[in-house]
Image (cartoon, rainbow over all chains, first blue to last red; front, side, top):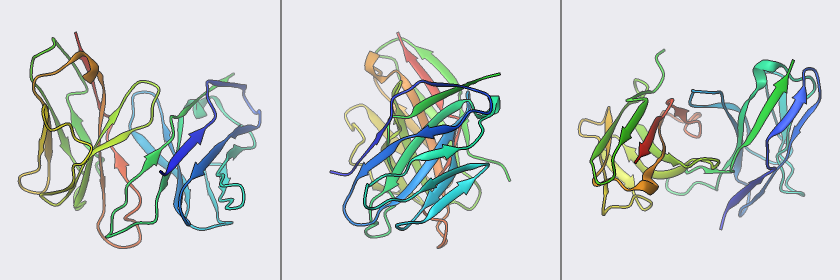
Length: 115
Length: 116
């Protein structure tokens, strides 16, 4: 079945370091891909998304490129800040049928940024 | 614009007791979701509503879990009786029905349940 695999955390970085959180997926065809972020005590928030191959989603300095050939959607940021400390979830929606948009989430990767 | 509201934020109960969670989605969002998030895991869908109709409840353990969305706006998720393994965070999310943004779901802060 469809699935999402994320790198295990926690990931601990110093401020201004480069961030990569790996995400690979298994799905039929061309699913839509997402990164959600969950700050402490808050709900998940959409960070960025990409809906077709080679699309690049970006937001708040974060980027991820939809790579069909490697079935990946790695999250990157050039210079992290303490405020980026959160849990990051990679997710996909399989090709929707009958208007169903059903997320499949990865297990999440906790990021801790030290000042 | 107000976000998805959930209450309570935290709940501690003893096993075999009933518990209920409430969710008010973003105004105008016809689709409402309840998710279960175990510690260290991603959210897993329990039930999805389109207006007042439950259109996907295949993952809802119906022997002890029930949900309702009587007027197609706010929703209640109930567990009766609760078991130790139900300790988790229960997330509510909503999404608009208009084309162009149906894929994005807006999550509430969740209710953290601890069953003793």
